[in-house]
Length: 280
Ligand SMILES: *[C@@H]1O[C@H](CO)[C@@H](O)[C@H](O)[C@H]1NC(C)=O
Ligand SMILES: *[C@@H]1O[C@H](CO)[C@@H](O)[C@H](O)[C@H]1NC(C)=O
Ligand SMILES: *[C@@H]1O[C@H](CO)[C@@H](O)[C@H](O)[C@H]1NC(C)=O
Image (tube, rainbow, N blue to C red; front, top):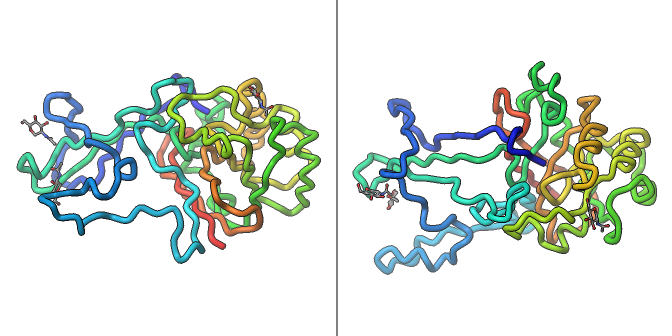
């Protein structure tokens, strides 16, 4: 989840050479990319009719052994409580076309955009002040054996639903696939409050009756909109559980995988974009 008050701004210079100072984002000398790669067909790369420079964009690698479960960042991906999507987030302030030695992009994103992780400081102000940011998250929790499960499509994740899933003790990482994937909500620009997530009693059941420390889900919040803050509080209070939100779980079989998730080391940020893959 994110709110305007909690959305720290992420500003990153890509391919920035050491001698460059940070350019300011003035509209005069900045032009958006015409489109984000992946939202255009590869044949659009018709640079002087040369079509052989088209890159390959993939969801799986190694003959299907490695599955990318992160979403591609595009202006049309959903943004919390917004009908307009993420919008333009990438600029090219220095471009070779304009005489620079290299192309240097800048981006500006709320940290809870797309596939992302929540740190305890997201909903606990004293944890935020104490420094429990994304840089303090345990990579041992974010990487290891994980179970991908389908949850019933007719309910939010309540205690009753959690119980019915029969997730054995000892399972530490679970990715919950829900109706959100069927509805392709992460591919829709308009934010949808009717997404499926944890109700408070489902979150409490997970904390009390399982060994799950990594909770993954397929829309922007693990908590259902109606229990937004209560569910987050229950899950993050002990600072042991890590929440990964906005996962892309389409076309993956339920079962056991090795999951690998790596957030950015953003000092002071209570959220971060995260790249997650499954390995069979
Ligand atoms: C290049 O510079 C021109 C004019 O100086 C400007 O209109 C254009 O947006 C710039 N293009 C890029 C990609 O920076
Ligand atoms: C960026 O650099 C490449 C060459 O590496 C060039 O072909 C391309 O036109 C440049 N892009 C822009 C927007 O200037
Ligand atoms: C889940 O809860 C949301 C409100 O948070 C509601 O709009 C939605 O209909 C519920 N989904 C299901 C499948 O019950």
